[in-house]
Amino acid sequence: MYNGGMDSGDTAWVLASTALVLLMTLPGLALFYAGLVRAKNAVSVMSHCFAVCCVVSLLWVGAGYTLAFGDSWGLAGGLGKMFMRTVTTETVAGDLPETVFAMFQTTFAVITPALIVGAFVERIRFGAVLWFSGLWMLAVYAPVTHWIWGGGWLAELGVMDFAGGIVVHTTAGVAALVLAVRLGARRDFGERFHPPHSAVITGVGAAMLWVGWFGFNGGSALAADGSAGMAILATHTAAAAAAMVWAFLEWRKFGKTSLVAIVTGMVAGLATVTPASGFVGVGGGFVLGVAGGLLCYWAVPMVRMKLGIDDSLDVFAVHGVGGITGSLLVAFLALPSLGGLGLPEGTGALGQFGVQLLGVGATVAWTAGVSFALLFVIGKFMPLRVPEADEIEGLDMAAHGEVGYHLDA
Image (cartoon, rainbow, N blue to C red; front, side, top):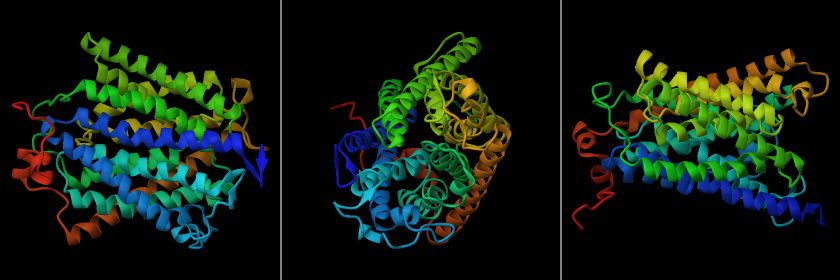
């Protein structure tokens, strides 16, 4: 089983998980988001997700990986692993080949800025998407990853984030809110409701997200063992519970339950369980699913109607609120008395809650501040928003010169 410190079983599982997590972005998230927008912007959304994957992947192997997992320089890792120059077929990360670990982490770096795409659909310039996504990954995602997963200051304090409730969902949710505020609402926001142009496409993308999430959470154990199995079981339970909560709330309000409602609830449950998935049992997964379904459902109209922010596809309400909720509740649900796998030695629930709150607060502050700064700088060199005429025409034709559907063909 062992070959030079590498475990073949663990390596095979993380390789499979890597493929599952990439599936979450392409095609999962791309389809999920594309179905939710108007038909004239479907190509644009898929283009954003695809291009973000390419740009972030290149920047990750160039500098992002070393900023996240290089020897600590305080707020980020050192530059010793730039362009993967010290990553060979012989180097290891734990009992994995470092190439496998680096590629697994690449897929996380890809999906995090891709999640933000949902906040600015139908009104942003393609070039602004690429510049913001690339710089944001380097300046926000990579440092926060280092703080928690790369041995940084939050890791030293004992912050618990198994698969990215803080690293992925909190950062993406907060950045989405910042972008929505900075760009402003779509021209007809609040005046009329535009239903998703294809609930079927969204449903297919959501199904891929659910399956891919087993690699996201289960793969984060970095081993083919009981921890990975429990993470998957808790993840599946949370997704199912949140989907049913959202469906029930939708039925109670409108007398009907839509496919979009069920799949949105599912994603909320998955985001909520992610930070806790490797620390809780099945009961904890169920509680997190119910909590995520309730709180994220409440957050959607709060952001849209109370605050008047056009976070178009509810990235903050679903991913931000879900990730923060799970990151805080893990301090209690990880207790063995509640079926969890235990807290760090010598730490009680209230003490761990304080650590989690500090981790979330620091991440929110860093993400918001740096995201605003990046948008300010990028805005000095190019307009962030498309002209009104392009927004009316749709970004598919205006920005990409093609349409998603040729109905007369």
